[in-house]
Image 1 (cartoon, rainbow, N blue to C red):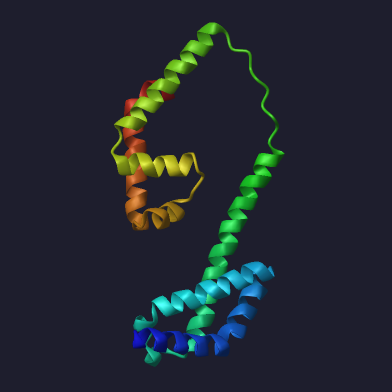
Image 2 (image 1 turned 60 degrees about the horizontal axis):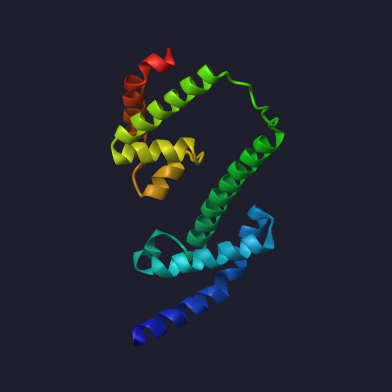
Length: 175
């Protein structure tokens, strides 16, 4: 219990000393005070959680905090940029008019949809999940890797194997 009180006191001292630096860098990058405050808090929580891994011989704490802030600010900007691009493309997209399908076309479309769903269901869980996250949620492979706590190479491998299997199962629909 005493070490927790000491850790909290140490973190408080570090926060008092470096919060201005972290907040200033976050605000310069994010240009939003609320986001900069959130990132500042995130950096210090992360520092507290990883304090046992910090080696002062590798560099000054201010440098570590600046690097952490820069990296996480870039991650946030990329994520918000991706959301903004998706919203803009959605907003610019023309409202699709409902095509008039003949009854035969509707039956054919329903059969194709059912085959695709069945082929997806036959994939191993990891391959199906990666493809669904990429195509239905619009996530990049790096975002999927982070979300699944898997390596990027593994996610790429699962996606490739899943697509190859789907191509084999649905080849007649593709042609």
